[in-house]
Every structure is written in structure tokens, then in C-alpha cells.
Length: 223
Ligand SMILES: Cc1cc2nc3c(=O)[nH]c(=O)nc-3n(C[C@H](O)[C@H](O)[C@H](O)COP(=O)(O)OP(=O)(O)OC[C@H]3O[C@@H](n4cnc5c(N)ncnc54)[C@H](O)[C@@H]3O)c2cc1C
Image: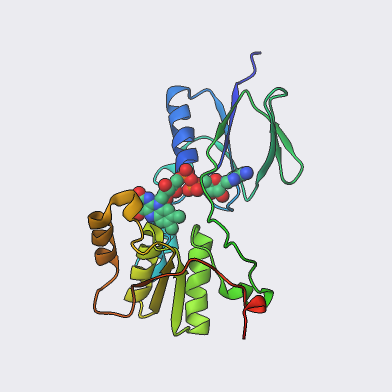
């Protein structure tokens, strides 16, 4: 009997799920395994800092349509830690290995860490914004800590959108970015202004964009 060819897709985000979908469409006989570090099926990440954060969209509404019926194997909550193309092997963090006739890398992006170490005493107050879990952690922090102000490091699209979302739920936000006109390098000054006007209501303290080239951890800050 001829063994089925196996493709291992690493990353269960938009790219990974689109690759798995396309593979099953063009070659339904393929054994497709999708490994994803997040412990859930692929979802619409664009909602993470918008509807999911404000509560306008429920967690059960962000799944990708048809994802349950793809006919692929999911290894979720698992990180691939090594690939050996010559041996056609993929090694997962739990030590298990999977053979692969082909490997698709769809590992996406991660938030860039701050250049300075975060004071461990304040670490639970510093959150990233990338995943549905990040969004629910921030929502929970808003509900339990009721902060009077949130500082967002980075006034690109994600920072501006997140500021707009927080503003709609009544949180005052300070956006901090080393660029005096964030996004203008990518979009030009006019379009960058439109993006910020869209997300940051002018008449509010939300949306103050201040240049701040350096982060200083509390432990080393001068008195
Ligand atoms: C908060 C937020 C809001 C956004 N809003 C918009 C928007 O409104 N409009 C728009 O067009 N775009 C938006 N984007 C951008 C869009 O979501 C990305 O372009 C898209 O998520 C990219 O998909 P991806 O599959 O390449 O990567 P990702 O979505 O990053 O998915 C990669 C996946 O791979 C997993 N992974 C990484 N390493 C491993 C490993 N070693 N083993 C196993 N799994 C691994 C990760 O955990 C992740 O789940 C937004 C992005 C974010 C973060």
C-alpha cells in the first residue's frame, strides 16, 4: 500500500489555516497536520484589539468559518522547536516527532520586546497585544484593576486601534512612540494623520502621541 504524503504546517494562524485549506482543496488525499502554539483553532486575529477587546464581539464569534471540517489533524497548544528537513522530521516541544514530506512555515510575527528589562514587580501590568489570550488578559485587567490610564507603547496601526478601542470603553490612553509622526514613514504624513484621526478622537486626552525615544526600567530610574 502506498503511504499517504504528509505536509506539516507550522503555525495555526491565518496563513497556516489558508495553506491547510488550499492543500486539502488541491490534494484531498494529503495527510495535513497543523501545529499551532496557541491552544485553539485558528481565529480572526483582526478582532483581538477591536471587537474582542471592547466586548462587541464574543470569543465564540471569532473562529474561522469551515475550519472544523477541513479534514486536517490539529496539534494545538504545541510549539515546533526544531525541523530537520534532511531527515524530514518536525520536533515538537513535548518531545514528539512527526515525519513530513513537506513543511510549511506559517509562524507569523510576535510583539517586539521592550529594549529594557521590565521590573518584575510590575510585570503583570505590562501586557502584549497579539493573541485572543492577550485581549482577554487586558479585558480582565481593566475589570479588576480599573486603571485610570493605560500607556500603549507603539503608535502604529495596532497601537492606534487599541487606543481607539480602549477609549470606547472609557479608558484614558497615552500613546507613546519614538516617531513624532507615527506611521508617516510607511503611509506618508497625510494618510498617517487620517489613521490617527480615525482612531483617536481629537478632543480627548486619549490619543496624545508623545515622542519618547527610550524606556527606563523603574529599578534603574533616577529619583
Ligand atoms: C491585534 C491585531 C489586530 C490586527 N488587525 C488587523 C486588521 O484589522 N486588518 C488587517 O488586515 N490585519 C490586521 N492584523 C494583521 C493580521 O492579523 C496578520 O497579518 C495576520 O495575523 C498574519 O497571519 P499569520 O498566519 O501570518 O501570522 P499569525 O497570525 O501571527 O499566526 C502565526 C501562528 O503561528 C504560531 N506559531 C509561531 N511559532 C510557532 C511554532 N514554533 N510552533 C507552532 N506554532 C507557532 C503562533 O502562535 C500563531 O498562532 C492584526 C494583527 C494583530 C496582532
